[in-house]
Length: 421
Ligand code: ATP
Ligand code: MG
Image (tube, rainbow, N blue to C red):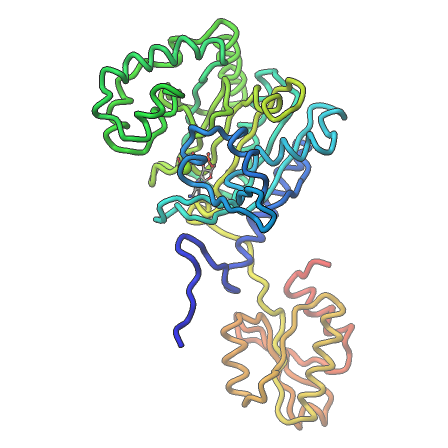
């Protein structure tokens, strides 16, 4: 029989790597707490309309990338392709926007997009995101950007540049969309088929198209920053001033428009200079909450692509290798090893023992593979004397311990390996 493989573009997390995920998530938890962002969790699938209305039906995500299905009740459902629309839905449905503002939320989710699988691009991937509702001050843009920056810094990541732009509001965008329509109409035969359709409905989307020919055409297109209304221009200047004052370096990129329709004013991306991939991205979306049925309320957020962070993280803290492996020879010793292990675990020590009836040599090989910090072997002599050698696997030194004195053994191990309670 052949083995069934995981679907293309998905990833397994193996026992040797799961601690890396826990590390990234723990850093995210700590970072979010620095400015009062509280975690939310929401369903993996939502009604399709949430995304067609929220993300926008002329975007790549909605047009090409969603996993949409009809459930057995005949309703159209979609596996979440991002978190912002759901976070807004959750806030509206649960009355959170009627409470204290600003509302600061954060999430750690898996998302699904029918993307073209390659390095850093998967069909199921993970995002860590933060969202801020109710504040329109340029400092709220700067806070969000600084939270993304802090998260990357707390993970020890270097080699990232921050790109920012303003894509204005519906008022200033109307003139800009006309200018774009005029420009791209002159080149209509060169546009990809999807963008030919976007030309009338939403020409700004063409600027975010991934087709090489369209990227080339977009280079000479009119720039949004030449069309900003006074309010949007002032807001953009104030955001840059706030970033300058806290020493956050950025590059302005007037071609940055982002792939979701809900953005207004500030947009930004943190780019890995080596791969040119965005590791985190976001922006302001002052129209989204109203679009999804709420009162007009400003919003801003970002999401980080967790898989893209992994290759950039220099160290992941430590794995949960055993503090001690207790090897044994014969059934009586095996029982003593088991009793000791269970008692030590109750005291907060990570312990493994033999469960396979293996030779001491094979047990020690296993202890080595799992990177046990200490080992001890219990055999007939040890049972007779009630003592055993506790061996430090990193330097080979050993000290005598009393097998049955669990509290002394706990104290020695806690002292040696600095176990946290
Ligand atoms: P890209 O331009 O690379 O397709 P995007 O604009 O579609 O990215 P966003 O919707 O802004 O991405 O999602 C936020 C973050 O999620 C991205 O900055 C990136 O780090 C990550 N991301 C997006 N698509 C994928 C994917 N298919 N696989 C892995 N990570 C992804
Ligand atoms: Mg994309």
